[in-house]
Length: 354
Image 1 (spheres, rainbow, N blue to C red):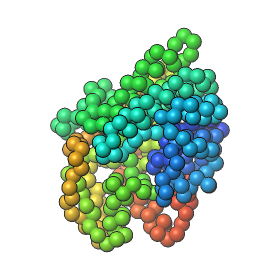
Image 2: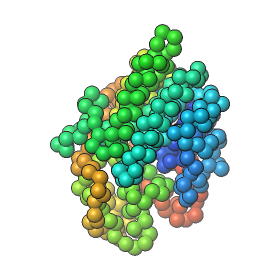
Image 3: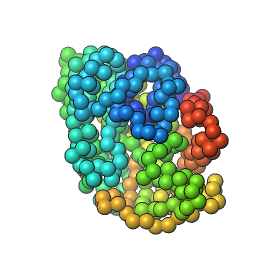
Image 4: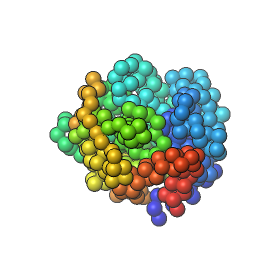
């Protein structure tokens, strides 16, 4: 049985705590858990004006608490009140350039926010499973085109990558020191996720919103690094991977408490220009120009090997890169036609989990 079917059955009624639910991934995850019938609680900064979460929260079957993971007392109260069985940690300063411009805030959020969460988990005896979402950028990238496996060395050349690498070590330390002992044994895993694409993204510095915004305004897309290669993955495949790991940690913590790559198959590793040209199949007037790169030094090539996840989890990517881009275009066109974002989310979620 595929993971999406197992997850649909497993999460119904489960108490789930999500950090970072107001972010882009968090909003989609909240919508998924709401559709699956989970008893979810979200904790995050107030949703940005115009964000997807702001537009869908009133229609979600979940509780949201405005809070900052740097605020230990507030986070502790939220966790203890919710008494979750499964914790999904998505809260982070997630924009590479923002981390570069304000590294102190990046480390306070990504590093101490993760420490605060694990301190709460230590105190909350209901928790059975913890999934910490990091990034494919935690690997020490030599720029040689390597496709990274979970045993490759970690490292980070910029504050975003470095702070996410720290999250990996924090999770491992708390697992070994406090959460997998003779007295208590719960599942703890990190998920190294690739670039995720989907509808409803409002962050204009990211690729898809910049393309769609340029199309709407009749202007060429400005590409900072057109030949930068990344593993592009559908939002729903990524979240299904996170939920799969959360479920398996709950059921067999001793077998699945490790690091996992969640990304596309090899045919999903493409450069930025390929994605733009693919969008031209849907929007013939899509043009581009070369813009200035950010000050932060980003790796030119990056790829993930998901072989371990496909072989050991009951998960695999279900959507091809073509289908993923089709769903994005469908989302955008339905938005333009006036359909509420929550209705579009539900349509795509139910198609995926069916």
